[in-house]
Length: 327
Image (cartoon, rainbow, N blue to C red):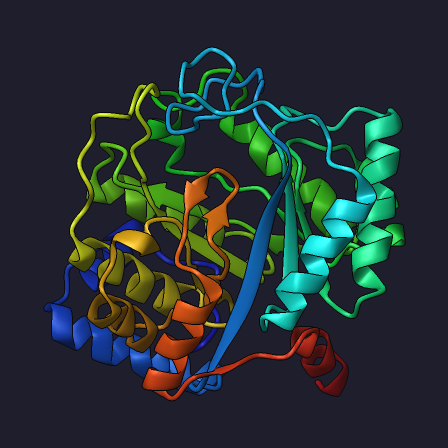
């Protein structure tokens, strides 16, 4: 029986990642069934509520102002348009709605007040509301919680050692500080990373170790494959092999057994067979909808057909909270 651990050693994690592939998938699938209903998948939708002109220099991101990527810059969307998108997402089966803004950090201004209203409005629809707005303070996190925010996404992206090769405009510790502020406010944490940026396997393991040392573990862990965007510093990198994604998801499932592991960016490049392996290896959450902020994603109908083919059903909203109340 697997237990929830906060003391994984690097050698242990590397040994897990490098297991024979089928044995690794079997082990991860066993752990998955111990902690989760293997027939459930959480459907989340992601909307860019403010696009482009970001002051950060994240090497993978087309929204950085310093890169020429052809992204159409858009100011904060009207609340009505956001609510309409959330309603459509709910009709299509999504139970979590995530709003992303290309900001380095939240400013205490009218835009933040509007975001708080968006959170309240989407929460009123009975959906889990998630935001990814950059760095935030304790007081801002508390206000988001009071407005009804359920989850906050703030990825650490990679290992602390490799991080400075990807981002220089904020530190790895800045990211961890934001996660602390989210936790203090009582908001669930959504935090993962990206593979395929030129990092080593050891970097991938160190990223998972960082997440495993957080107490409690993040409730949601997105595993992203780099989608190379022309005009960014990583725009010429190739697409990673699906086996790397499967290994990463399986290792995350074993090390973070209670977390929802989200098969995120890069899914459009994966066959249904490849995605089936990821679900078998412990992925139990996906982004549904035709776009992830600014990058393409499979459409709702295609995803529903795939889930039906695999015999998977959608997880209802707030199940996490219900389980906490029961326990």
